[in-house]
Image (cartoon, rainbow, N blue to C red; front, side, top):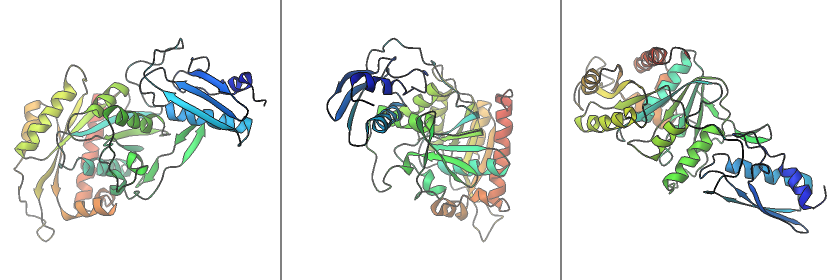
Length: 361
């Protein structure tokens, strides 16, 4: 292909935006195009502030130009956001479904340190062992822990080209498809991002991963209430939320705040139920003994007060901590006491999902 403006535009017309199904030229996203002897440069002007496909579009455009013009041509694409949209087919507004995913369930907590990620990872494994097709995404952008808990912290996702766009393939561990920002970042370095950057990264993980057919996609949320919670509820059609807490009064107070946010008029996320983690301590040498070191039945009483199910009470045992540290979820041992506990939790969650969204179950 000749190095002309018309030729470059012809190539860019083959780059299709996955959301609008229109090419980036007709959408008015290609601005300030210049074609020099061995250099092509232009501005990729986004039609909304945080387009989750921005990086994929830039990469696809650069690759198409390199394929047509040759590897020695320099391609410079600047991405500009927060602009007035050009005339183009309107993308789908409001929360969206993920293609092939039946149920999306948020696993949340009012505060950190209550074992939310432990519950999410073991619940995912237990659902998979029960025969469900399960995905698990780590939405805790600033403190991703699922790669270590699922034993894949040293693995990297591969990519696949679908309709000319690069999609990430989730890693699979213990029968669960999983994705996390922790798979792309240096585990020794902190991610210092503002809220919009974190939200955009999460949307890329959600919408640029090839999940395939899933019965459940569990989202391990960051603790508390944040931009990430708003992003999830605005972008995805959720089946419901599970809230994890310890029986301690301090944890329950924060859990109530989280429940209030999720069930409020702005979000309206159905509450599937509560999970009481660290319900009691049982020493391995005294399996019949229970020590209520964080209080007794706090989540049970809160569930009764709210009129929602108590989905499970998970004790503290040494094996849970070891499983998380060594990347071997204890739910992968179905014959163990804790394996049976998470199997029961998975059954109750599946039943509750069928009650809340029977048409998709």
